[in-house]
Image (cartoon, rainbow, N blue to C red; front, side, top):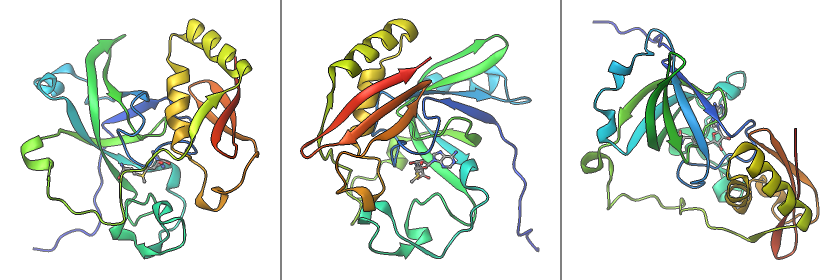
Length: 237
Ligand code: SAM
């Protein structure tokens, strides 16, 4: 039997996420627990009966398309950011976004499963997904099979917080105003996102340069100081 060398899949859903741009998204799910998103099922899959029983699970595997990397070419060897951008590894030995098939896989905590205005949603907590990410499939996470205690992942330790995150008085006021207006815990989200130091590794030693990250509808201005990250101000409409 000859197999086709390409397959066509359907987008079953789309992610609405707090991450409006790639910069600032953590490298894996679960690192920024305050990140909120929701998966909207798309027709003809937008039926509550497709999700019957999912309330028995706390986490799901989400298979998705790295849609914001589609036009870029893949390379056999790449420099993973976790190695400081110095060493190269084979693309299939990494979780890089630029791959022959731009498909991502994340184990994500789920919350409410619900219908709203004839649309079907699953709340996602701590996702590492860009707003607008197309989803190909979801499956329940099975601890007995998926959690491998003796699994080896040398060179890939859990990222550690590099510096403390401090807010200027102005930024504190902006966060409080934003939270009152939008009912979203923006301060905790900013703290977790910036503490990951989202800058590319070649910038890791640069100090006092202003960066911007968009979370929800807020643009966060921050910079790295000698011994901490400083949130300068939070701009929003
Ligand atoms: N957990 C997934 C995996 O292992 O396949 C994703 C890991 S990948 C290293 C995480 C990065 O993917 C994030 O930092 C973000 O920049 C990027 N990303 C997330 N959603 C994306 C999308 N829809 N298109 C392109 N890049 C995306």
